[in-house]
Image (cartoon, rainbow, N blue to C red):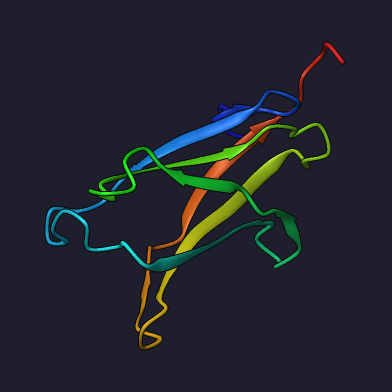
Length: 105
């Protein structure tokens, strides 16, 4: 296994910066869906997402407070944005990160 990006049991937080091609406020009124899964498809978590600034929608904080039940190894995440007005969908590419086991419970 490679060097882990995250140690199981620690809170997991990432900041997603929205690409410049989407102007300030572009994602106002959109619903954000997200999942972390094992490569085989088993769901591990549904992180909490919140905009750092709900007016500009430039930076999205993605967080899971308790990762003690996460398996060691590679996990995948993606995020889907759905515009409530017409159902338009924008998705991120799938990201992969590695979880390592911790010693201290």
